[in-house]
Structure formats: structure tokens, C-alpha cells
Amino acid sequence: MRRNIRIAYFLSFAFHAWFWLGSWIFYYLRFGDYASVALLDSGAVAVTLLMEIPTGAFADLLGKRKTLILAFLLQGTGNIVMGLSGSFWMLALSLWLLTCVGGAFYSGALEALVFDSLKSMGEDHRFDKVMGGISATKLWSMALCGVIGGFSYYIAPGLPFILNGIVCLVGFIVCLWLNEPTVDTEKHSLADFFRQNTLGIKTLFGSVSMKQLSLFLTMTGAFMVVSYEILEDLLAIEFGYSPMGISILFSVACLVAGLISVYIPRWKIQIDHKVMLVVSVMIVAVTRLLSPWIGMMAFGGLTLLGIVSEVVYNNSTSVLVNQNTESKVRATTLSTLSLLRSLPYAMGGSLVGALVLLSGGAKNFSLWFGLILVGLTLLLSRGIKKPA
Image (cartoon, rainbow, N blue to C red; front, top):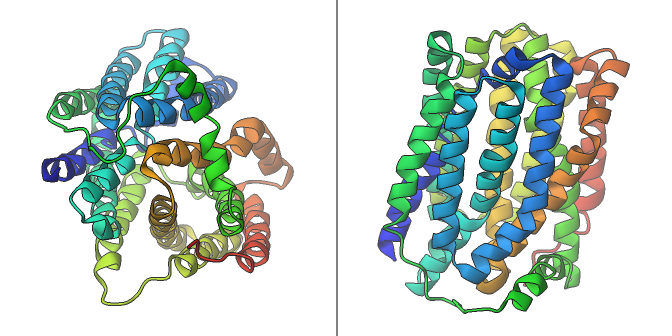
């Protein structure tokens, strides 16, 4: 089981080797206009959401090891085909049917594997610290590969995707050395598979305390998704950042966020993850609220702070959900939460774009976005009680 933990660090690095971090939208535009980009992105979100629950159930029923093997194979193949695409539909199908499905299989499976591996060794109390390190590895991977990808884009526009695919296929090979945790591992029938898909909702909204926590996580999580999926990139473009500039900006932010992710669990204090959730959301809200009145350099600093807060938010979410979920439904529950948070953006992504235009640009939209998020956080946080 200890080998699983060591491998998990590498898998986090390999899956998030996003060489295309600052250039993806420019690559998409080579195959069409903004409407084409919107179709690619909305299709990707829709496929990911459709696959979230089935793939989470797959992990719980057939094993986290098999799920991760499949995730890296699909993700690696999909990225390489994307980088070699010669037409819009070749790019779209490889994105939707390979890359996005691979991402859905990965979602929640690695966290569940780590928690179950630690629990089988009687060390589940270390989950907070271990996930902090794994999250840092993910962010450092994005930081390093984002900068490299910014340069590689000028060599060949599809090269960042190809590099990402190659690293993922290395991760596919490494997955073969994983051991399936023995904690609560069971064999199930096909009927169990379909019943499993309902257990995530029942777990998230079963008790009063979990219902209050889940309501906070789904509502604020929907805003966080909009923030990092589209608003950060729109603001960067509006502030005049180039593809290379965006790569460097987000890479530096990920580097700092990784340091925070490692050291927060090591501080000799008792961390109240409810407080961490509320504070991190409020920081993101304030950074968005200030966007209309700041300059290019200040935006870079606030973006860095916002990404750090997003990491703290995600880490605290992971700890609270994992600590209060049984192993046999853990991956399903995490996938369900991911679906609920992403569903509003998937259904209303075009509405967000229309609101940006209606409000006079990303900066003005960001002001109203921040104000609403502040009010929502204050309203929902009053009812949260840490689940027993």
C-alpha cells in the first residue's frame, strides 16, 4: 500500500502535465471561430458530466486501479490525437470521446485510492497531509509544463497536446504497478452498478449536517467552476496578456499554490476545514470584485491569490467529504459532487458569455460575480456544521 502512495504523486504529476495551459484557446481557434470554440468547450463539459457518475461507480465497483489504468490510456491517446488533428471533427471527437472520458474516469478515483490505501495501513489520519502533497505535485506539474508548453506552441501548435499525451501514457504504464486496496473491496453484479449511481446523492444529502455542507459545496462550487473555467482566462485576455504571458502567469500561481498546499497541513495548528472553506471562497469573491479597478500587474497578483484560495477550497472539500464517506461509495460521492458543481456551467455556459457581453466586458461582469458570491457565502455558511 505504501507503493500506492508513492505512485499517486507521480500520477498526479502525469495527469496534470498541461503543456497547453496558456495556448489551448489559440489552438482551438485554428479550427474555427469563437462559436466553434464554444461548441468544443460546451461539448467537453457535457460529456464529462454525463460520464462522472458512471465512472465513479465503476471505480467503486470494479476497483480504483482498473479505473486509473483506463483513465490514463484514454487521456494519453486523446491528447496525442488532438495534437495531430487535421480537422475540426477530428479534434472534437478526440476531445469528447477520449480525453474527456479519461478525465471522468480519473475524477475521484485517485483520491479514493489514496484514502483506502492509507486506511488499510491504519494511517487514514494522514490523508490531509498526503493529499496536500499530491495537490502540490499537481500544481507544480501545471507550473512547469505550462511554461514549457508556452514555448512548444511556437514550435508546433499541436505539440503541447502531444507532450501531455506522452506523459499520460507513461502514467498508464506506471498504473500497472498499483495494488488494489483491500478495504471494503467487494464484487458486485450489474444491478449493483446501477444502484450505485444513486448512492452519491444519498450520501451527500442524507444527514442534516451533510445536507448543509453539500449545499454550501455545490452552490459555491458552481461559482468556483465558472471562475477557473472561463472568467480567469477572459480577464487575462482583457488585461492584455499574450499566450506566453498567460502560461507564465498561471504557472507562477500554480507554483505558489503548490507550496501552500504542502505546508498548510504541516502547520502545528488545528485546522477547521469549515473555516478554511468559507475564507477561501471569500478571498476568491473579493479578488473578482476588485477586477474593474486594478491594473495588469495587480491583476496578476490577485489571480495568484485566487488560485491559492481555490486550492485551499478543494483540499478542504476533499478532506471533509472523504472523512465522512464510506469507502464503498467514496469515488461515487466525489464524482456526484463534481457533477453537481459543474452542472450549472455546463447548462448555462453560453448564458455566462452573454452576461459578460451584456455587462460591458469581463471586468464589469467580475464585479457583479464577486458581489453575488460574497452574499451567497455569507448566507450559506451560517448553517454549516462539521459532520460527525
